[in-house]
Length: 465
Ligand code: GLY
Ligand code: MN
Ligand code: MN
Image (spheres, rainbow, N blue to C red):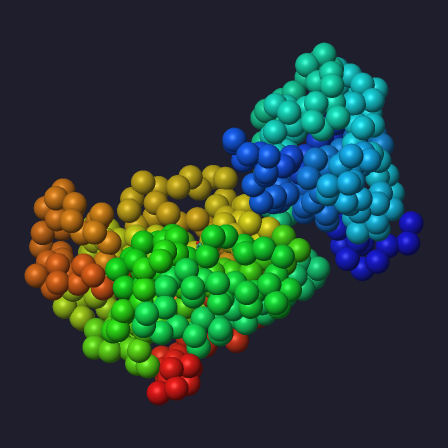
């Protein structure tokens, strides 16, 4: 079969997975997932194909199932709408078009999956991808799931899933091309946001200005619910945009990313409502930016992501001591997790077909309960082709800073008289998407300004100041 470049790369992913799975016999199913109904309506939630299906099939039709038979290889089953469905939702892609995009020779209607499985009755079966297949088999075209008597092996399914997660870490050229497109669309949106923000505009209105540019620039979706927080709302790590209007003198935190071809971009910028960062905003912004830039400078093959996180934690602790918000020696503060009161998340995560992409932590490294490490979503040595976010932040979060137990535990570590006066400050996060290269790193989101003077110039221009 003649394959285009993209399809050949997808075929290569399947080849590598099959080689690593090393199965003598049996069947692996990788469902994309079905549309999820919104209860009480005749509508559906926005659809997102399971990343394992999207990765191995290169396409992501709702109800699609990629099937692997150890003897015969790969077949993709894709639902074909009947006449009534075509009236409402259209024809959908033809089997031939799916074959071309996926590089698969065998693409069959989903209605043939039941029969395909029947011929393999009783064989060892592993299911990865979306686990709705076993619950909603009939909707996948498999009426007789329970009677097929497959010997399913959950441990084996986990082993196969872990192989795919590992393969997904280093992005291939097709994936990187899509991630660059996503980053370019994200840049357009953030630039609109930085230019259009002003006092009196609501978080929701700014979200719209940003997202419209994502879509104009080719995004198919937002990679995650856009986070737009003004003033105190910027302290909520995943703050949903509200009708609250930005006030003079506040900071705005925007964490928003476009998605292209299923691939995410995840970028945060923080900027003033007015033309300039003022007072302690300047100090804290400079601290977060310095920490972020040094962490990015540390990205190269072989470096442990956790070491970057711990170094950033110490630098944040030191910076907060220098600014009179924490007390003591930085290493000791991090040992006691005191900086996690103000930097309560990890340095970042893997990025790809999910915003918090699979494979971030090596299996033998379970997450720690320590506040400094609890939300560290990546713990592995970096390798060329990995894409990670680097996103330190400092926040004044009521839920932590007003907690009586934490206040007691950190009585001597925190300058409470200063911190208590900043509970309305909000927060600052700066986040970029970083590709690990052979030599070091490339910042995929580098076009979006973050230097204080560059942001101030854009804000002044946007405000006509
Ligand atoms: N946008 C979610 C995150 O930064 O992890
Ligand atoms: Mn983000
Ligand atoms: Mn992120």
